[in-house]
Image 1 (cartoon, rainbow, N blue to C red):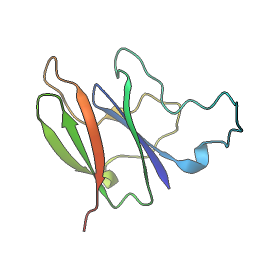
Image 2: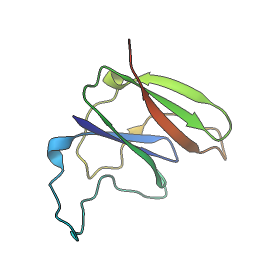
Image 3: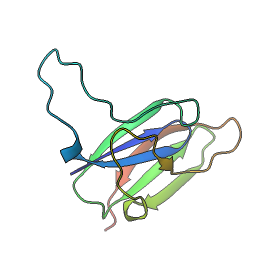
Image 4: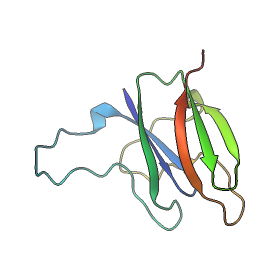
Length: 102
């Protein structure tokens, strides 16, 4: 299982679920992705079984990109991620979903 985190500036992080600890009720939680001015706020977090699927990313200006998850190297959970989609000035990522490869 992998956790995929996507930010408004197009940065994406793929992390093995084993890197997350279980938190009890009332716990403080864990950092899933470092956010900064460079990568922006977290837009969505998705969970996938295998990295054989694709991710469909959509922006507020109507740009959509379909990328195989195999092209994104898994990283640790406390990172800023890698660039998943190059955006035009003023554009932001608004949503994403998993699209099965077949």
